[in-house]
Amino acid sequence: MAKADLKTKENDASVDEFLNAVDHEVKRKDAFHVKEMMESITGLPPKMWGPSIIGFGSYHYKYDSGREGDMLKVGFSPRKTALTLYIMPGFDRYEELMAKLGKYKTGKSCLYIKRLADVDEEILKELIKGSWDYMTNKYG
Image (tube, rainbow, N blue to C red; front, side):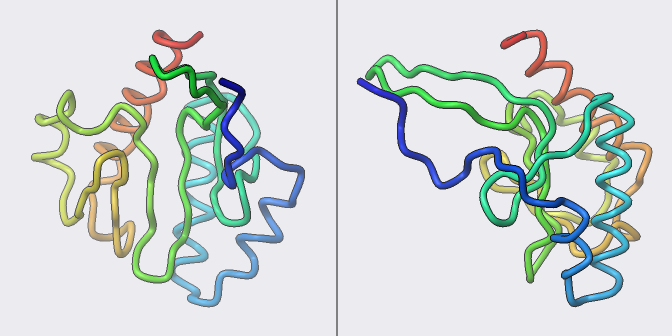
């Protein structure tokens, strides 16, 4: 089977232009701060993935079905309802950090935060670094 035709592909759109267009001032400032945190942790520049996700690094996956594609290793998006961070390995391996993080919600690989002020920034950095290290060790 060929690569999946995904909407979420790395592209050359401007990350700063996208973030500067975020209406809500606090969310815009938080998004720029998360971008700086992820740049520092990964050592890579941010890239747009699709129209609204900022990603760092990439990995290639292939399912048993033969479906394959590329995805960001770690990233985020300033969505209307919450700042969404993509923690690709999920959260089971980070129970201790999650207990200390603060106010948040999760999906399978998504961490939803209303405002950075609601969470412990040092714990958030540890979570991002743990996710980055796990994905880098697994996929190179």
